[in-house]
Image (tube, rainbow, N blue to C red):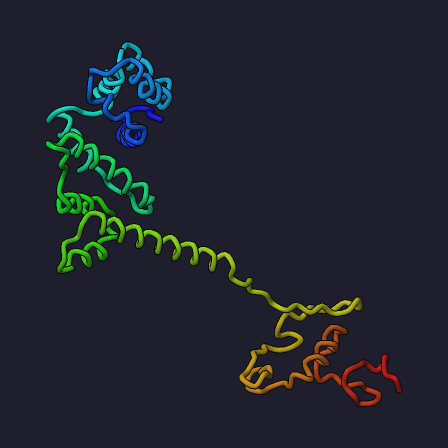
Length: 264
């Protein structure tokens, strides 16, 4: 619905399509139409504008008068209006990280308004629009712009807009992937083994097991030596009970338990 100058051109395009589809487009061009034929298009326009726009058309007696009143209120007229739109177009600057699709829509809207004020509806040519667009982009898009400018064929505005949307989409995917990877990094953890209820010290990582790293053959290496995987479970059981690897029973001389726990 028409809300003002910000979306007048888009609203105008939609209403023209509706009137044309219903074979009523002539009423906004011909002032001599019957009241019966004029009622439907007038109603269509009235139902497709916000309440804030009603005052512009309240005094209109025909659809053409209402159409003209809205045009004069929201579309710049004459050379002065064209100069104002040109100034707005040249002043556009896209901020780094801004939405590319939204920015291109804003750029196109101003270009379409300029076309509406031009003689016979002819707006700026593609080379002018491409030049203004490239100058309004952030510096990070300069490599893409240079690559397009080096092409032998002519770069149209639609071609430039399509490549910019592709590049913007690629950056969004890359940023999302990088953010996902950073938030899913595995935490740095250390194995902590506590001694039994008898008290004593805590052994963290190297205390009970040594500094192990996995080798190519599946074994764990401690310094320059190695510990077979089959012994790791045994050493783990001993460490949990507070027995350091290699400790021997003073009674049977076997490892893995204290003298007080010796089964002999």
